[in-house]
Amino acid sequence: MAKETVVVVCPGRGTYNAPELGYLARHHGGSPWLAHFDTVRDGAGKPTLTALDGAAKFDPKLHPRGDVAAPLIHACAFLDFLELDRERFEVVAVTGNSMGWYTALACAGAVSGEHGFAIADAMGVNSQAHEPGGQAVIVMAGEDWRVDPETARAVEAACARAGVLPSIRLGGMLVVAGPETALDALNAELPPLPRPPLRLPGHGPFHTPLMQASADAARAALPADWFGTPQVPLIDGRGKVWRRFETEAAALWDYTFGHQILAPYDFTAAMTVAIREFAPDRVVLLGPGETLGGAIGQAIVALQWLDIDSKYVFSLRQEDDPFLVAMGREAQRRGVTK
Image (cartoon, rainbow, N blue to C red; front, top):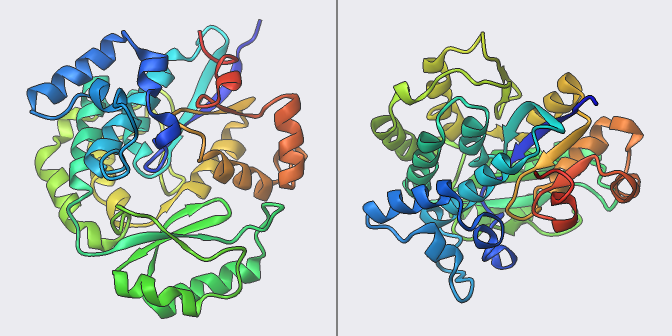
């Protein structure tokens, strides 16, 4: 029987929240990889992932912090990836959103599992090294998940007037970043929208030149010789595909700790390339959580893939035969794991 083809998506920050507390224990307790990650962190004098994941309650001042959230999310996603049933599913490409790029590197085999965790762990710390500033999410899509092109142009113009920069293109949403004063001024410039911009607490001005200190720290601490060629196609935050026999490891290192940190991350472009070029039978979103599912759904609607042209049609398809499988959702998880 032929295997189903899947594109795998690795989530970024903001996906390990109160409902996800205990995710590692529930799904990956006893994993040798989790034990390894704990040993690494314990040796560095950091709280282990098992301890953080096993806390009595979610701490909104601790768990979302970069140096905690990044390794937790990476471990959840990477171990989920290892649980995919490879006898039934063929991974034809891997991508990720923002911090999920580091997990995608490990899932695609461009770096080892050990180095993938070391990168995610270090970048969780490095992400806190930046000029003053933050991020906000602007929702442009309507209830049907469609984006009016005129609204999108008006939002971009408003951002330019306020002095904020595009950070992540996320389906029907735009994440912007910049100094706090610019983010404060944004509301007055924006056209009417479904809801006001949402500030992301604890987030820096990611994917902008304000992150230069983070990029410098990464280049100094994370060696280029950790990088190799991906074993499956790897789609970056520009929509570029890194293929096994075409990739220069040094160029992949340079992108990861240069452009990927300092320039906008276009997750919409990554998903567009993933779907159009690889035409997978399904898209698998790794855990924890499933908050990235909306952005993926909005990208699918924009493409009108499989005649899915609205949130309503997407929801109907998901009930009948899910095209998007979220491993953070128990019923869907069971359909793709060993």
